[in-house]
Image 1 (spheres, rainbow, N blue to C red):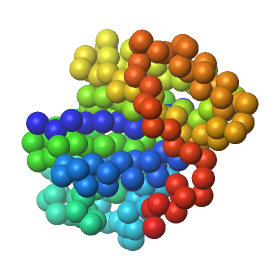
Image 2 (image 1 turned 90 degrees about the horizontal axis):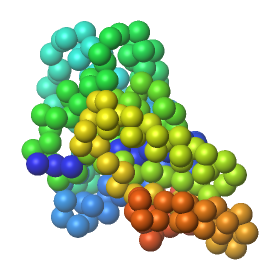
Image 3 (image 1 turned 90 degrees about the vertical axis):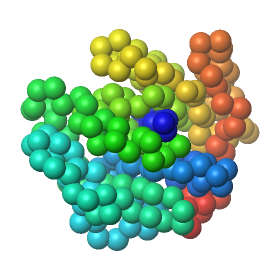
Length: 228
């Protein structure tokens, strides 16, 4: 049975979609079968995968579940790119998020889509938006683990602690199997005092409680170029 991992963060512009893209192919190179889901209305990961016109997106699938309609055939919404599979997003996902807020009991709409796919993949990765809205609650309700991305900048610790509290609430109220896989530091410039200070704060605060990945994503143009 495959593991579902959410990639989340509280602040935009930290290289989350690029990291999700590269993690997808890193797992593929290790011989793993991977499905990646773009659950961000900005659709940055969908762009990374080079998807053009998207006829059926994750938003359409979630609306099918909300309206209790059958899902289309998998070939219609699972795209294939260089050995990996992904489900694209579109701006229409914003309307779905608004719908989720109005409906009752919508926390597991995404889980209803992904659970039947578990046995076909080693890993299912969910790329999310920088918020704690209805979409991210759905992602946490579906996931086994969360990789929390942190940009070592001002207010990073505050956002990280808020995110951790939300994970604990989802674990106790909706998804008891949910855990934090670890904290991934991104856009790190080891030359700056601020980066060193925030990195030390994260380590001192969470060491022994949450895994802090040894790998750190550097602040370099090569990270952005890696999607091409």
